[in-house]
Length: 379
Image (cartoon, rainbow, N blue to C red; front, side, top):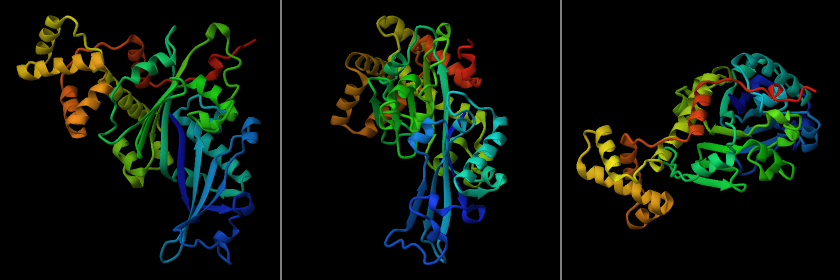
């Protein structure tokens, strides 16, 4: 379901009651003598929750007030970034239902009033969404830990939408991130990430974790479990349209707060990982069996392509797909590699998935909200 979301309100849709709650004081954004922007095209003022407030269980959204130097006159917008489950539960392990939106907007409105911002509930629902993160907490099967899953995923040559991708494999193997300017796919160990937050938010995937540092302290011993968290982050309106098929004018909190959209995006992202991982799982030790099976599953493929596919898989397994790619790029180009991968992806390859990978696929396709109370100690 939705985790973090950023919405934007125009000046007519909100009113600042306490200007000095922002840093810097935003009074002169609205009243003369007006704040000078200098050579910049905009001027920002912020109001964010402190680490102490979060530790006290007082969750607040992050606010950015932005004055843009536009013609014929400057425009002022309020950006509100918040974690929807933290608004409702003070944590993002508990997951949401579509019917939770009204309560979330009521609580968010009350929180904003305490922060010196007044607005109408309906304007929250109709607010423009500029960024949105869909996520799912996966309770892994017994004897499977997140680092085992992440360790396998890191073998994948995963390119997001044929853009340059930054791969970030960190925290001793407890997280992996595939990143472009528009989109991120992050897979990490939820428990380990909270442990990193006890030292500093800079070391964790998720920021503002102080409010849920003791999240798993009351779990029954007999219900100990491992949590793999998957997040698909759409970081601009163009990418929301591209991935979800929703036009920019319709990208509102009302339209995007839907578990079916979350399932659609997360399943698509996970499938992209599995499609590439499947190449590494093809059984080629029994060469006769591989060739026979491949030709049956791909009856229209020419023999030269059958042999080329075998060579690709053999090299990928023995020297690793990363080294293989580097060798190709040194001699040819990225375009050659992408063309080769596209050809491999088009074939019906009988690569087997680990059972826990299939279990993750089922969970992402069939959304059932998790709730911490199902695992808490009742004593």
